[in-house]
Amino acid sequence: MPLIRKAPDTALAPPTTEGDLASRLADPSPDVRWTAVRDAATGHGSVATLSRALIHEGDARVREAIFTALVKLASSESIDVLLQSLRSDESHLRTGAMDALRTAPAVIAVQLPLLLADADSDVRLLACDLARELDGAVVQGLLCALIDSDPQPNVCAAAIEVLTEIGDGEALPSLARCADRFPDDPFLLFAIAAASERLSAPRG
Image (cartoon, rainbow, N blue to C red; front, side, top):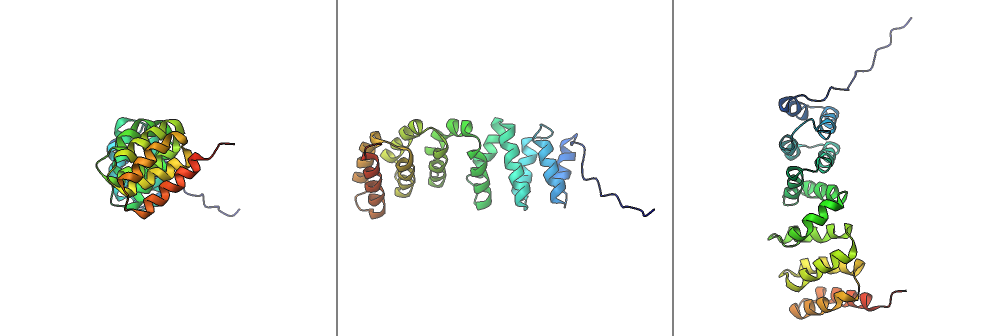
């Protein structure tokens, strides 16, 4: 009877210590790292360990699993890691954080006012995109306040793009005021005109 080699068993017991988790997250095998992240998402590990692993993780699948785990843990610490990733110079970290946050509208609802008021204009831009995940009536008020005061035309343009999709006639006064604030920006004026035309049209 021929011998049949048994496939290696890749299943591992959940890590029992932070050192065990950190060791598995540093394993050369992406499959081992992915499994460790999955176990950490069930509570077998700290956010700090996942955060450190995220910075150095080179495998897109494992990185996605870390972001998913941070959302699933849903602690103030794990959400902070996601928000800090929005500020990263690394595009893959910003994108991963955005994708993860899009799956958690309740988190966006809490964080959006703060993100739209952030001192970093790049964060405000990303926040406009996240606003699409929420109820339009709530978002409209926040975005109208933004275009009434934000000093950056590109941020206003991002907000106006979202308003064009989810807004209604109540946004028209803010759009007009924004046009008055940036009379020499042809791109922004075009966006405002297009948004105003759409939001003025009767709903059928």
